[in-house]
Image (cartoon, rainbow, N blue to C red; front, side, top):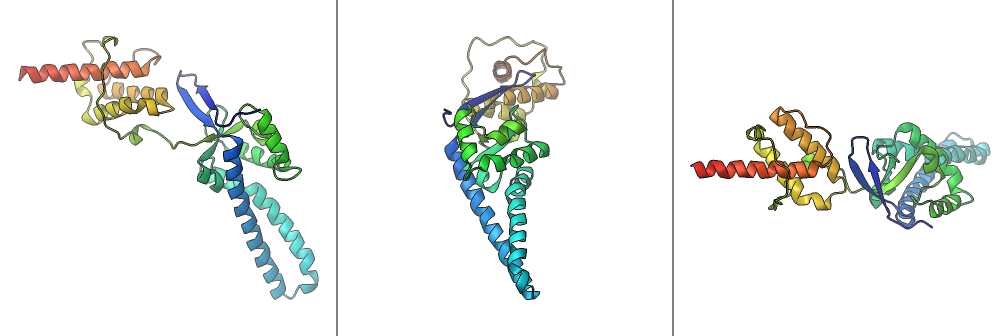
Length: 263
C-alpha cells in the first residue's frame, strides 16, 4: 500500500539531485474533484446551449437524438481534452491540480510533454472505470509512487508543487557562519571580479539552503554563474558545489577584511 507524500529523489547525469514530494491519493482526489466539477459544469453549459440552438432552429422532433449525440461528443472531448489543454498551458497543471498545489512531471523530473499528456489522459478512461476512478485508485494504492495506469503508460507522476525556485527567486538575507574545514581556493582566483549582486545571491542561497529541495542544482547553477563572472573555467566536476560556494564566500570575506585593515 502506498504511503502518501513520499519523497522522490532524482539524480541527473551531471550529479545534480532534485527532490520532489510525491502526491498521495488524498491530495490527488481533491484535485480530481475540482476538475470533475468544472468539467460537469462545462458539459451542462454546452448541452444547454446546444439544446437551445436546436429548439430555435425548430428541430424539436430530433432534439433528443441530437442532444444525446452532442452531449456524448462533448463529454468525451472535455473529459479527455480538458486535462491535455491545461497540462500544456500550465506546465503539468490542471485547475484542480493548481488549486491543490500539484503538478504532473516525467519520472526523470523534466516537464511533461504533449505526447505524455495525451497518453496519460487517454488511459484515464480506463482508470475511471468502473466508475469514480475505481481502477485508478486501486492501482495508486499498489504503486509506491501513487501512479495510476495512465501515469505508468506515459512515464509520468504527480508531485506537490513547491513553486519554481531559481537563482532570481532567492531573496532572503541572513548571517552565514563559515566552517573552518573548507577547501583552500587558488590564490590566483580573481574574486574581485565577483559583483555585489552575485555575493548577495550567494549569501541568500547559503542562508536558505536547508529549506530548498533542489539545493544541489541551485548550488551548481550559482557556482557556474560565479565562475563565468570571474572568467575562469570550472575546476572539474561539481561534486560538492555547496562546499565550493562556502569556500568562495569565505575567500571574499577574507579579502574584504584584509582590504579594510589596509585602510
